[in-house]
Image: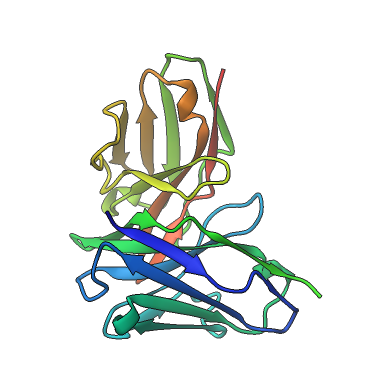
Length: 121
Length: 106
């Protein structure tokens, strides 16, 4: 059974940096799947942040691209998210998810439970 | 950027059929995926590539895609189907989610 688990500090001051890690178990990170981050502000909808492949290739949401960096650590079966210059608008539950590639489309079949990240002074 | 529009809410009587639309420009040329999210939980994939059900998802869940609207249909609605539902597509190397629909079972 594939499992994903987010971890990282739950509180950061404005202008600081969010750093989250997703640990993958039950599947190798070295597969044809991509790995994504999705966030959800309290009471709002889902927003795709970006994705990373085990080679280190990335794609980011254009609205966040200037502040986002993703990386992968294959030895630990982990991938990570860094979001700089955070504001209250970045307060959200952050999910990591496995992306399936099929016939030119991508979808998310396994998700972590999510972790609440709050920006507050 | 590509946009997906969903109604804020849909209400359905117990045992009846719920239809949740997802509007997008020429969406019929894209593959649409659907997620169910219950309060405090991560989303769960219920339909992928327009009309395919993952293992473990009841046959009551089905999907279609035509013209400018994709639709998630839930037949014989149960109380446990009450949740938020999101459509999703891939466009220009980016994931795009719909605005989400809250399904209320009466």
